Length: 298
Image 1: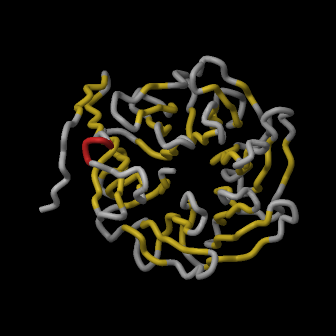
Image 2 (image 1 turned 180 degrees about the vertical axis):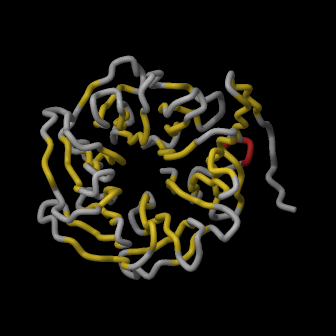
Image 3 (image 1 turned 30 degrees about the vertical axis):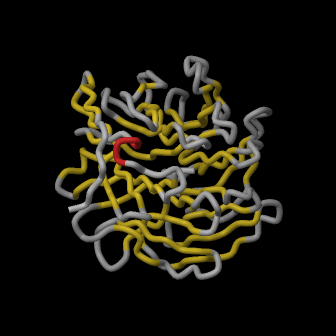
C-alpha cells in the first residue's frame, strides 16, 4: 500500500452536494514534481465528471475535485497556486476557482448563462472564457480579484470554444464555429478586441500555445494533431488518424504534450507525444473510464 503521508485533509460541504478536496500539502506533492490533472467519468454515469490529480514521479493518483456533477476543463494559474475549472454544480456551467492549499471552490461567474473553458492570462490576473450570455457563445474576460467586471471580447455569428491565452499576453486563440462545422482558429487581441483568422482549414476544434509562444498545436476533428508556427502559420502534422483527438496540454518546459483521444477501443484516454518523436504513447487510461482535459501544473 502506498504511503501518502497524509498530514491533514479537508471535507467541504457544498450547498448543492458534497465536494471532497484533497489538499496538495496533505498528499505531499512536491513543487518540482510532474503534476497533471485530468477529468474522469464512467460511461455508465456521464453526469458525474470528477477532476483527478496525478503525481507522475511517484505514480500516485487521487481525486482533486470529487462531486456528483460535471467538473472539467481545469487550468492552473501561471504560479501554480490556484486552478480554475468549469462545473455545473449550481445548475448551469460556471467558472470556479480553487486554491492549491485547500478551501472550497468559489463561483467566479455567478450568471444564469453557461460560462465555461477558462484560460489564464500569463500574469495570472485575468481569466478569459466562453459564455452564452451574449446572443451567441462568445469570448469574455474578467479580473480574478474582481470577477464582477466582465468584458466581452467578441461578437461573432458563430459560437466560440476553448480559448487559450498566448504566453506574451497579446492574443487569445479560440475556435469559431465548431458546432456549425467551420472550426476555424481565431486570434483575439484582448486590448483592441480585434479578431483575425489564423487557420484556413475547417474542422479545427482545440488549440494550445507552446510555452515559448512561437507556435501552437491544433487538434482537428478528422483525427489530426498539427503544429502551427506563429507568424508564418505553416502547419506540420504530428499525429494523424486518432479518433476524437483534442484538448492538448504542454508540459511547462514545452518538451512534452498530453492530449485526449481514442485508440483501439471506445474509451477516451490520455496520450503523450513530443516534437522530436511524435509517436503517440498511452500516458494514462484504460477501458474502465473516460479521461479528458489533461493539464500540467506549472
